[in-house]
Picture 1 (cartoon, rainbow, N blue to C red):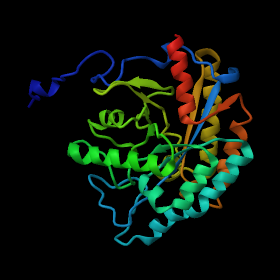
Picture 2 (cartoon, helix red, strand yellow):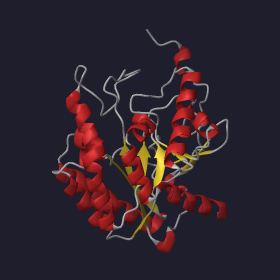
Picture 3 (cartoon, rainbow, N blue to C red):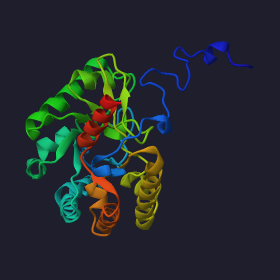
Length: 309
């Protein structure tokens, strides 16, 4: 039997896509951006500092990177703890060695439970963005609005208080969101969100509460995605980052500045057999025609360029 015609009715059907979250545009047609000092590539290193509850509920789905064994899954729980106690300090040393200023995406629950780690980040004076309440506090379609609203406001308010920063950025746990998330973020003072991965440059996102910038934090180049999801080798991971760097630099020669966004996890890349991967990547990328900055610094420069256009 043929499908009923109602299955082909789309309420927001129009050119380019079927929603109005952002204005349709092609990356190649955007006004070229030049980074400070005439650099061709902006490097954004995003460190995800996460707390995975041992008794996770997994509603409405099991969070990627979370517990996999029957409760209590101490093997995976303690591995995540390893990143926040050991691996992160290897990150700090690598950043200092190569002159990198990272951005830290922090779960608010981690900020509560690991004051020594939050203090270490604060002492570095690096930007902090909110990574949600914790890795099992998921945002999803059909979630009661009041529940999600409380989750967003508590996560942001407490992280701002604990970090002594006016947190402007957001990355949802598992990058998931509901139909209400963008509006709630703007309502709570967020200026940019890193959930959407459909571009290589920032773009304006439409919400009922005002504009929200989308910042392109690549999922394809994430350490967890390449090493755990795709099960590629450490050498392949390094090679893929170098390939991306080389291609974006070449593309920027004719189309304007690009962003190389690396999302990394200390419980994964901070292991003694993997930290050399981060060092090799930073050694290579920082030797290129690169402007290295925090996510908000990059966004501010894009905003300025847009205002002058």
